[in-house]
Amino acid sequence: MPELPDLLHMQKYLRAHVIGQTIVAAEVRQPIVLRNAVGDPPELALKSMTITAVNAEGPFIRFTIGSTLELITNLMLAGRIQHQRKPDSTLGHLCMVLHLADGTRLNICDEQKMMKIYFVHSGVYTSIPNYTKLGLPIMDPAFTADAFMAAAREHTRKQVRVFINDHTVLNSIGNAYADEILFAAGIHPKTIVASLTGEELHTLHAAIGSVMAEGVRAVDAAGQPIHVKVRDHMKVRNRKGQPCPRCGTIIRREGVRGYDVFFCPTCQPVRRKVFIDWSTLPPPEAPGKDCE
Ligand SMILES: [Zn+2]
Image (cartoon, rainbow, N blue to C red; front, top):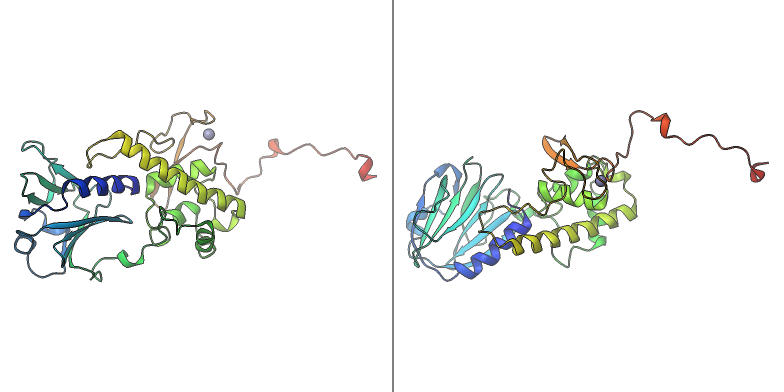
């Protein structure tokens, strides 16, 4: 799925290229992904309207149309937005197409048809699951260590990977960056939040900030079209079988709640061992003077 650095890249690009443009025509190619809370069909309601704002919010991208309508996308696992500038370069798997006044098109695509497009009156979000329940904004100054610690105290029984991946806790960490953050923090993905020390939580908070900032920098630097997921800068994600860039141990993949997670078993050691590994226990100490 596109993650926050991808969505911020899209926001920047779309603000520069489509704000102020009039929609000449709108086509809904896959009604199954559309949730229409406006009533009027988008083909009629969007025609001759102008795109006035684009905002990335958590996993969503919100297009403001005129002053009263909004199209809000949740791209889920495979959805993409393409700004098509040449007639023959469509990505395919079109769900919705906005034909713009300058002759370009915004193609909203998903080969799995799992994404959602919410068509709503401005500010009326009751039809959008979790849109008004997004958690702490992780790229905002409001995301302080204290705020993060308070969130952790409310989710002590969760596995840390599940905790940081929950968009109602932290507004936008997807699977790929969750793996990168836990690698940066040196924490095994299945560690229970309650077992993390205060120092480890501070390390994790700092890792969220640094990994996401590096992601934003890397995605911007790559300069790819907005429909391309940039993942080359990742250290463990999708690198099963490759050596850890820090220690050389082979990266492993495991399942956490049905999702693949990637980690280095040396840099991110398991916290609770099921079997005691006697070979690693220190030999019994000979009594010294202090013990006499
Ligand atoms: Zn390692």
